[in-house]
Length: 144
Image 1 (spheres, rainbow, N blue to C red):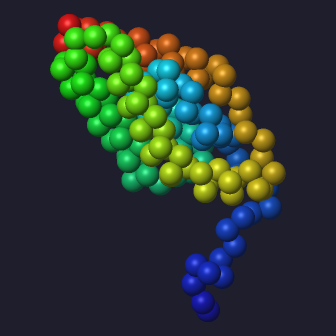
Image 2 (image 1 turned 180 degrees about the vertical axis):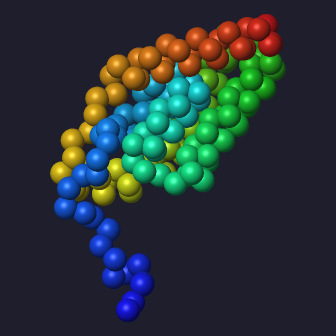
């Protein structure tokens, strides 16, 4: 019997059980406005919904931590508030790029099975407010 991946079906007939994932493209907005922690949190949660492996989830979390560390370093070196806000947006978008690279293909497979994505409006606002506030508190507490 052949166990080659070429002959294994990749798309099942119905979406799998569990909560439907969010569109990975939609995570851009909370990541841009909420920073790298918001993008990483939503990316990990969505990755779990898509059934990503533990190393892939760890890569998203590591990207969020590294981007937040870079944001702290930039915030420490800048005196202007606009540069700090811009650094947070850039760091969030960089985390989103990792999320989209890891989740685009699994989400496409999931959507081809007939699933409708969940709404990110509520979780996106919560991540934006909660993680954005956490980042501000850490930056003000450690640097300013």
